[in-house]
Image 1 (spheres, rainbow, N blue to C red):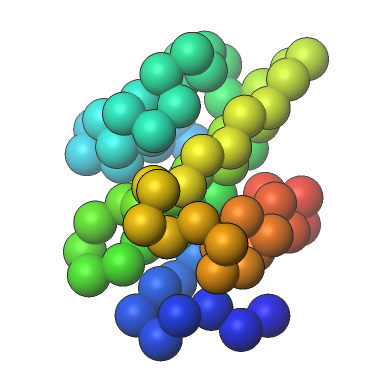
Image 2: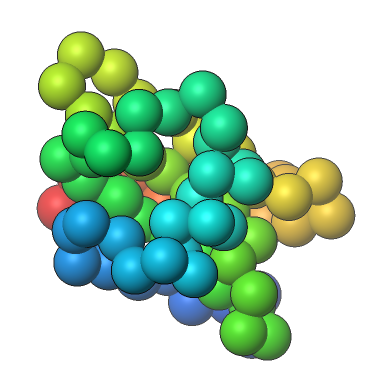
Length: 82
């Protein structure tokens, strides 16, 4: 999958480190952050710009407005499912 040059997608260890949890909460405030079973984050320039979170019974994804439509959503979905 071709992502913008400075974007990388990662599957961090759970539970999320405090800085990553704060970024995930900002992007996906309604997710049960204490009960995640999977997470994929998109990072650009040291900032989290997208998140795809999964838990028992649900999942949610969000990418910052300026980064949408560049294949990041698909890369996040693929990474969280891997």
